[in-house]
Every structure is written in structure tokens, then in C-alpha cells.
Image 1 (spheres, rainbow, N blue to C red):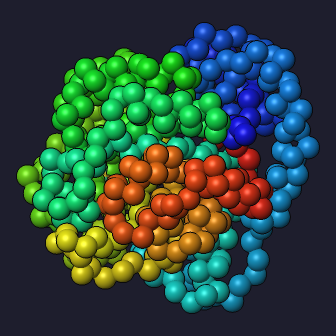
Image 2 (cartoon, protein in one colour):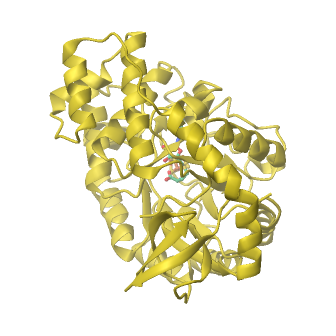
Length: 427
Ligand code: SAM
Ligand code: SF4
């Protein structure tokens, strides 16, 4: 099984290359690979990750040819906007969205407050329609390996915070590499997220070794390891990591400081900006549903993510975790998250927007609903099941007992049902 389509390079200009997928072109960085016009390549997250022999590429493309156009047709059908009975005011705002006109904060708040069924339907359809126009049916699927649940921090919301009494684990470098190999070679993943608590047992040297080994698999490596010294992020970039998933969590400094004892909001932002400057693909975002958060905070979260020039938006609902100071926090409404996806798409048409597993925890159909509200990226948990069960940042996570193969199959079926194809979204 291979969840990626190779493309052919049709143009090269400086660090950029144009990759053609059955006539549809995407800009990508030719960062690692020495490529020329005519080469067949795999790209992920807007970066060429490897070159593949022409014979092999043509065989895969032949398999995809009919399916690719069939999927596009489905996507075009599914992303149509239907007439809905909504107020003139909401209609005027959505008209601005359609025409790509500037949205005032008041417009964004009105979108966030939409609540009637017909209103929600139109808001989601409009965002999905923009996603289709801007990105066509491309959708990336990343695998995530949660390699340690040790953490030196005590974030109030998190089920693996230092003071939680839980069964801790650390995967050895060999175990992580084995899991990565299986994800790439058996399941066809082209992008892997390496996530953990802030665990200094994995020294800079160990992480560099890990990244260098996984890099040999020709895969896009995302880090999600929390706050490390800038020099560590630099070394890891040099070792071959190319993406960083680090949320700022909430743009409201006061709430941030309270919920992350000992952490410094400005320092976290500075680190996020530093990794972006280093050249990392930046995935960042926020939690929704933190105590004392207002609608203005949510709008500011989206705007801050945009101003950080995030390549990928990653936001999800807080799921109250037993034993944490936020264990009694109110459950977040699934539609609020879907509206945030739709607003993000309206504000940042080029964005890659992730449907997070936390959203799937709120609602088992969230993957589909999120993709139909403007999202175009997914992450699948590929942590070996004995460890996966212990990475309990929040309860009720989906697919805890499911074989990875099965989750991949179900996701692909879902993507096919709504016409999404595994071409790279590009930059
Ligand atoms: N330690 C790293 C860090 O904090 O950036 C990476 C791992 S951390 C578990 C990944 C993300 O999990 C955090 O950015 C946070 O937004 C999210 N998270 C933590 N506790 C959560 C909860 N109870 N519900 C939903 N998301 C949560
Ligand atoms: Fe640690 Fe990250 Fe959880 Fe905070 S959110 S306690 S840094 S794992």
C-alpha cells in the first residue's frame, strides 16, 4: 500500500521546482535531492523527499491514472455550495470570503457565533469550496510516533505532565527506527512526526543520531519534542529534520503563563519563529476550550498562527484529562472546532489545516467533518500499540486498540469517499 503519488519535475528555478501530477502543478522546494527536469519524485509538505526510477514511477502512475480523475470529480461534486436559508448579514460575510476580501474582526466573530444548522452548513461548505479551488483534492497524511511519555513540565491540561502518576515509557532509538521503517516500507508513509514529552533523556546527540537514521528512509521528518535549545533545533535541521510542530497553545499571555508553570510565552514564540527562520516547515497552533478563554482569544489564536507564517495549522479541543488541574473543564463543542477550521480557511486560503486526533476524540466522524469544513491534512497514530496505550495526554483517544494497518485502510477509504488524493499540497 502506498499513500502517495509521484510527480514529474517540469520546471526548476533556484531552490524551487514545479512538480506535475497528471497535469496539475505544485511548487516544491528541492531541498535534499539533486534533481533535474524530467525526474520523477515524491514530495511531502512542499519538499521533494526523494527521486524514484522512471519505471517504478510510471507503474504507480498507471495504477493511479483513472482513480486520480475519478477522485477529482467526486471532490468537485462534494465541495459544491448549496443554497441555505441564512441571514443577509451572514450571507454578506460569506460573500466577502468568496471574493477573498478582507474580513473585519467583527465578521470573524459572527462566523464563530454561527449556530443554526443552515448557517453552519453554509459556513463549512464555503470553506470547503475555497479549499477545493486553492488546493484541488490534495490531502497529506502524516504518521505520528509518540516515542516517550516522560515530561519535565507540568502543563495544567496534559495527561502526561510530570506530576501525573502514570506508567512511563521511553522507546529506544532502535525501537523508534524500527517503527519508522515499518511505517515507511510497509505502510507507505512519506512524512513522520516524532513526538514526545519534553524528555532530556534524549540528548541532542541521541536525537541527531535518530534523525540521521530515519532520514535514510527518504521521509519528511517532523519534530514535536517541545522546547529545546535553539542550537539543538539547528543541529537537528542539519541532520535532516525539516518540519517542526510546536504550538504556542494560546495567544493570551496571561492564560498561557498560568497553565504552563515555569514557561515563558515570549520565549516559546521566539523559538517557533527561530525554527521557521532556520527553514523548518512550521506547524503551530493552539488549544481550544482553556479556562477563561474568550471568542476574541480564539480569533487572536488564528491570527497569531497566520502571522507566524505557519505552513500548517494544528489546533484542537482541550480534552479534560483525569488527575490534571483541568479535569473538570467543560467539554468543547465539535462545531466550534469545525467553525475554527472554516474561519482559518477563509483567512488563510493557502493553509494546510490539520484535523487533529483530539477533534476525532470529540466525535468519531470528525475526520470527515473537518475535511469537509476546509481541512486538508491528517495525522495517523503509528506508535506501536504497547506504547500507544501509555501516551495518554487525554482520555478516549481514537484507534487505541486498532491495528495500524486497519486505521490506514479506513482512512484511505474515507479519503476516497470524499474524493481526496495523496498528491502533495505543495508550498
Ligand atoms: N511536549 C511537546 C509540546 O508540548 O509541545 C509535544 C507533545 S504535547 C503532548 C503535544 C500537544 O498536545 C500540545 O501542544 C498540547 O496542545 C496537546 N495537549 C496536551 N494536553 C492535551 C489535552 N488534555 N487535550 C488536548 N490536547 C492536549
Ligand atoms: Fe509536557 Fe508537552 Fe504535556 Fe506540556 S503539553 S506537559 S510540555 S508533554
